[in-house]
Image: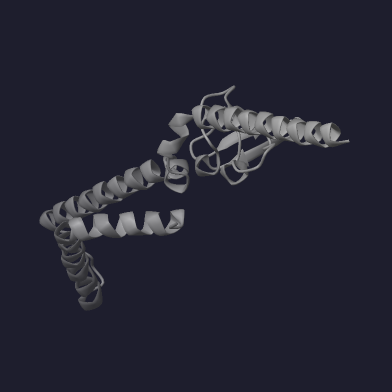
Length: 178
């Protein structure tokens, strides 16, 4: 994942590439407005500023200020949305709701999986409360949804009943032989 500073630098660079003509023209105008002034200072002690030079200088400063203001606005917009850039929204979160009973996908084959309740849903993760009351963060990909969990729990109950019946039949057959 890209660092926020890298994203900001890239956005400023993209803006500069988009407006390269304006930036170059404003820099050249600034140089044209300033160089004759320095040459005039070198040749004589008296400094004469002509009105067209002042106008060109003010226009180039205004263009530079407008570009800087646009860059600052774009920078602030990206900075305001840094949380979204760092933690993008995970679409899988929509399958969960607070209060849902869930289990971990890796425990779906266990006879007694750890049951948890969805406590809070964030942009990219789900906070669950386990049986001991401890809050744990999980990615939505690690959890089974409410429907999948109920299906697994029903299958486990059926399997437990089959095991009990098999055990009862086994012990009954042993007692009948005796």
